[in-house]
Amino acid sequence: MQTRAVISEFLGTLLLVFFAVGSAVLGAQFIGTLGIALAFGFTLLALAYALGPISGCHINPAVTLGMLCARRIDVATAVRYWIAQFVGGIVGAALLFLLAKQVPGLQTKGAFGSNGYGDRSDVHINMGGAFLAEVVLTFLLVFVVLAVTHRVAVVGFDGLPIGIALAVIHLVGIPLTGTSVNPARSLGPAIFAGGDALSQLWLFIVAPLVGGVIAALVHQLTHPKGEERTIADEASAA
Image (tube, rainbow, N blue to C red):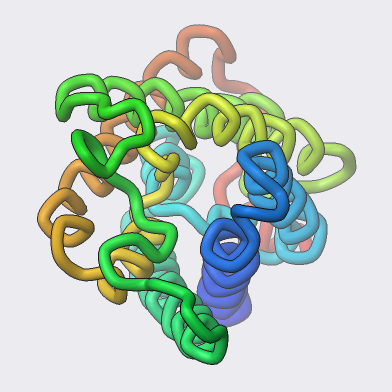
């Protein structure tokens, strides 16, 4: 179960970066902000149904941290997930970079679907505003994941509100920071964009993790324990 789950987290993060970030890198001028937001939401929705029963389809270190704080997974599982997610994000970005280089005239340096603030923000939001935005946006995503699942696996219609939430988050967040809410999604593109994308990367790792922790704490207040099951319980029931 653990091996399949780790592979699922690697694959899911790879595909999220390649397709969703790819929509911004390759198709922004054709589909606009709405199209990019839907690409992220629909990609996560599809992956939730495909991989949710295996790993929970976190494909996001902030979601995994929220699950850890909610005591639905243990530390060892969380560490395995984080490694798989970050590696998956880098590999997905590498494949996207290779494809982007086949498009004549497409610029990747300094942008490449990376996140940013200041001059790298469409509305020139400052560092404090970007941090606050990423915390609040990530809070919504992780809170929805925790609230609709009540356990590790994503089953039934659980994936629908999660995908919708990510789409809405991107509609709000794209003009602000390009929308991270996912440290693994931010790391891969930043590596290939270079420059300021790397120097500002810390914010898009720290802020989503803070948002994930806050979401887990608030969830404990709004959704008392009782139905949650650990990943060990999920494995034994499978």
